[in-house]
Image 1 (cartoon, helix red, strand yellow):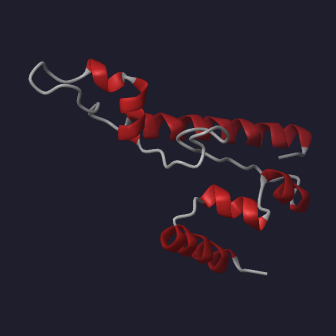
Image 2: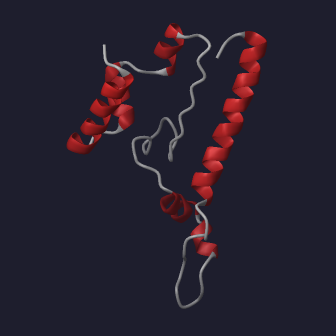
Length: 117
């Protein structure tokens, strides 16, 4: 059994050396909400990804500039002589984290009521 540090080091090395996504490695290792919940039913698990948990882009890395371009928000910024530019703040990254925080906090409240993560 790996310690958490050994395990995360192994994951990072595989991502860097072999170009595998974390999602692919976690699947291979059998790490999922379902398996972790068996170990600790009170666990609260949050996973944020740029393109969702399933679908054709699920394994792609998501960064705020990519989200701004693909969502079209960049098309309403900039000037006539520059074309689209990024919004001044990393809005997608910030909002993703804020929404995840709300979800985690609500899950903590529900765990206090139900005893389940």
